[in-house]
Length: 420
Image (cartoon, rainbow, N blue to C red; front, side):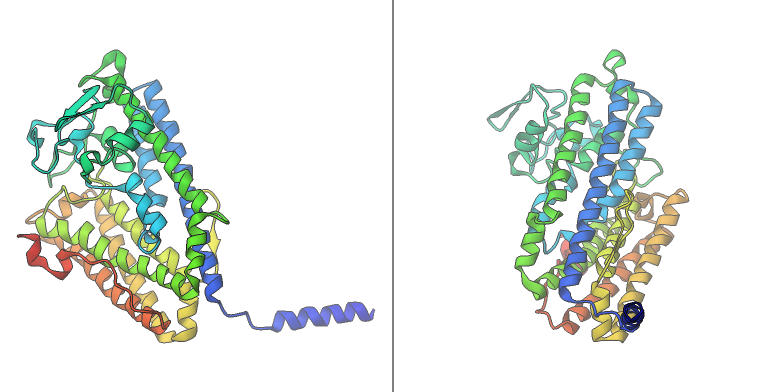
């Protein structure tokens, strides 16, 4: 009887104890868990994309092409939420170009409209069209493209000639193959590639067998690359080890570097403000599919995920743990409220943009010259991102971390340079 009574008293005492405060070590563990779950979802949805592409290849039709496009859009959602891990994590940033580099000179890959042009002073491979040419002769160099394989794409075609816009792999190469060029400028409409481009028996635009081979190889390579990053964030993986080696202060700085650099220089600047200033539909992230609004929206969701230590998984791998938000609340409750309010305001601004796109006005139309209302919606998301970055800087100071130099952008820091 005494043992039962003691057990009840002990349980009551434990229940009454206040929750332990979050520690930096706990926060970094959650940060790694969110990364692992998000990259795992990216891999899961990429495999679903592969299945849809296999169905397209087996039976090219409007229906199977539409299904493959839908699967591509679905696969983008979790992947874009990983981008807050780029800046500060060298393993991620060095790898990212294989899967998400943009913009790309699509003439490297396949046929393009005559308006694209036949050459570029900056890129000898500008219109090489590897799908149409089993042998590429560029600048005195000959590349054997007889077999379009994952190895060929990764080792010979990606950044051919050391030109960054020669993007041969990753989501955007697959996007271009599924949609084709968007020739609508800032008018309505996305790319409109016909399903018969993948039908060797009823081929349109030539070389359907090689186009199929390219699409299949690029998709296989995307999965291999994502498997690499899932392993890096698994227990004992290289990314977790690299993060741990930085120590607690270095790890927290890594989280904030990712948040601040994505918020400011990358998203607010290079991906949004630049295109808005130029009113240029080529300056949009998912330009062939008109999915840019969701690409940007998921970047913002990803920033929130790492700050709040929470992730809602499409594959059931939800994470909810100790967070940077917890540490800030313990140090400065007012700043914690400010940071949450800024993140919420940014999300709200992006939801307005997302709703506008879902209502029928694509992102490239919003940034078009003369569209004052659409321009204002896009400018509002830039303003919100810049404003939240100021609070992120305050978080760095409050946690007594060394000053962090977030990524910048001429579009924000030196606008005149954009037009020079």
